[in-house]
Image (tube, rainbow over all chains, first blue to last red; front, side, top):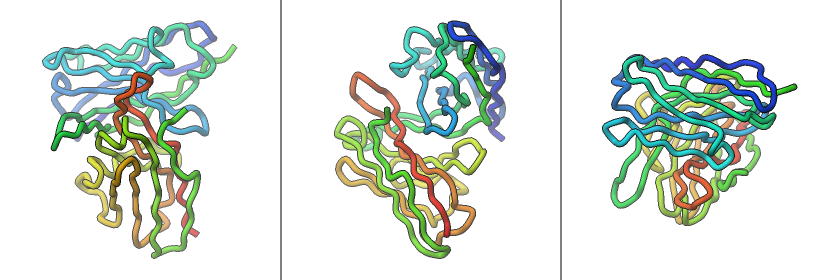
Amino acid sequence: EVQLVESGGGLVKPGGSLRLSCAASGFTFSNAWMSWVRQAPGKGLEWVGRIKSKTDGGTTDYAAPVKGRFTISRDDSKNTLYLQMNSLKTEDTAVYYCTTDRGGWLQFRYYYYMDVWGKGTTVTVSS
Amino acid sequence: QSVLTQPPSVSEAPRQRVTISCSGSSSNIGNNAVNWYQQLPGKAPKLLIYYDDLLPSGVSDRFSGSKSGTSASLAISGLQSEDEADYYCAAWDDSLNGLYVFGTGTKVTVL
């Protein structure tokens, strides 16, 4: 069974840093593309960013609100995904989910979706 | 600020059918596949529809998706109380400002 378990959330002051982890099991993590998605209290879903598998280049992409502040990385030897969050703002307060992703081209159209989701970890940025 | 627009809420009686719209543009729905996610109260989201109209294994065939131009729709037939949830459309966006975008979300209430 595919499982994703996030950890590392908590209370942090504005301007501070936090690192989230996502422990993966039940699939070949090194082959997986992974994303972080967040949800502010009472709000909708917001994609944070993704990391490709090392065989596909291991590159990262980020949403505009977090670009330059957040860094996604992976340790395939530990089957773990990370989200390093720096220069945190109050608007970063949210539940953060990690996901396994699938993407590619089919009939000349690009598809990308989040296949499996973890239960999430809560980050609160407040003074 | 989402680039995919959904109605905030829809409601219908049990056993009826509801449809949720998702309006986008040529840079997202017009060019790329649309997905739908279901989020039950207090739970993590779950993939409901992918590539416009495909159901993942285990998802009830009471759910169906469609796409036309720069809009997409999710239909739920034979509405049940367990379908009461938030539903989000999503797609890859080719524009410079965003990459993967979610819709604004629709709350489905079973009367």
